[in-house]
Image (cartoon, rainbow, N blue to C red; front, side, top):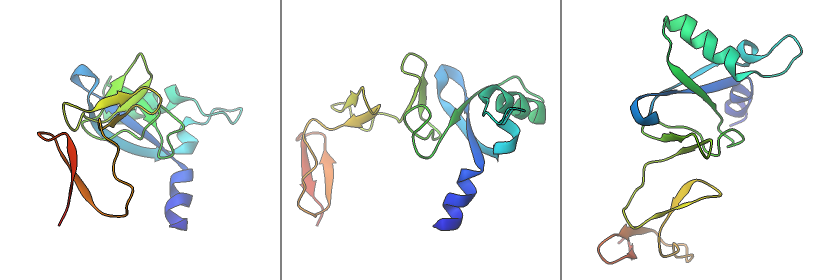
Length: 131
């Protein structure tokens, strides 16, 4: 775990936006690429580096494992919401609503806190015990 955290502390992550701002790809580059001469991270340096590397003019947004940038770590299929400046995962069920603070989806009924495993039952609008 230490090496994983150490590795990700020197790496920057970028998400490629496709049609409808849906994430198509997430890549990793060295933090030195996005660090300017004053030692400050600059997202645009990373975007320019990636597009130069691939010979493209794609739209990239920086993301982070710890949620410090754009609320959630971007994943393929997530959507970038420009108004919220956040990465939002796909809605798992129609009945779930978006928490505006976390930009994560929440069930209409809280997950039971009894140490057991449950799965969401959309038809019954309830958590069913996994047996």
